[in-house]
Image 1 (cartoon, helix red, strand yellow):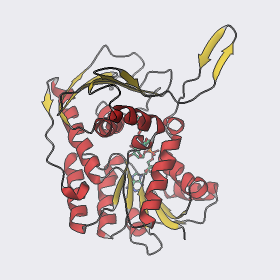
Image 2 (cartoon, protein in one colour):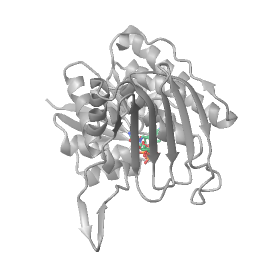
Image 3 (cartoon, helix red, strand yellow):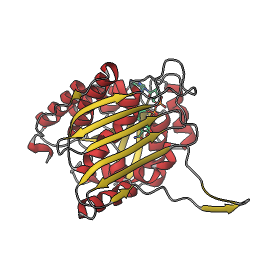
Length: 336
Ligand code: NAI
Ligand code: ISE
């Protein structure tokens, strides 16, 4: 039997996830959708030719007996409310990043899940499902480059819209590194500083872009992440791990190498949807399979909380220019 899913939020990633759950993945069926823009929700149902009911709001969808599990793909500030409602209804919930826009919000979700007594939440951090990051982790874990000492990373988007503010470079963009680098290194962050290089003329007046985020982990590994969201040339994710005896780099997504007109070239992708398409498929199939056997896994509410604690410190560091401590409480055994 297919898992009956309800999707809250039919914008860019909502549509993408509805398409993949309806057309690409196994054992899932989208039976309910909603959005504050109900016309858009109805249009998505019609365009994708799925038999899904449009609900008036997220709470009606969560509490519908038709819905067995919930996907939250609405704007970040609405995530906390919907995830808490899904936990209260005892329904598994896949929530796009960020789990909540503040660490306090994530903490409430962790506490609600602990009180429920069983994992219900998977956070949409897809990078741990990306083949390239998985290969990089295998090399680190094998000991082939010794202990990781430094990481040089970049998160570049071609451009962003006018609603994108300076703090979103942390909560919307860097949040992926804040999650995946903890997972890659099996370590937690202890401090952060944010520095701003010369501003690009391609960014709108209100946005400070690029930024360099300097993190330190509990084991003493130093990480620099360049966040540059108006780089123009492509969607480019880089990660280089410098170890004691060697260096390991995140592989480039595979593209045809072209010899033409006296040039040797490789295309660079322009869109996050294409760069991580395989990872999105695998993360959601894992959620569906997990729910069907009663075992939700993958990035947890605790991982969402840990990333949010670091994000809060990064935002403070953006404002002060100082080194800010990152204090994460010990992880409850529930999340081991
Ligand atoms: P979007 O703006 O294209 O779509 C968001 C949709 O949510 C809109 O249609 C809006 O009307 C709807 N919405 C807002 N509040 C709502 C509410 N209270 N109830 C119902 N619907 C509501 O944004 P996008 O790009 O689809 O992002 C959505 C979420 O997914 C964000 O949290 C974003 O950070 C995350 N995201 C994750 C990505 C990833 O790589 N994992 C990539 C892109 C987005
Ligand atoms: C977007 O919301 C994403 O999650 C993308 O993966 C990220 O690259 C982009 O900066 C965010 O705005």
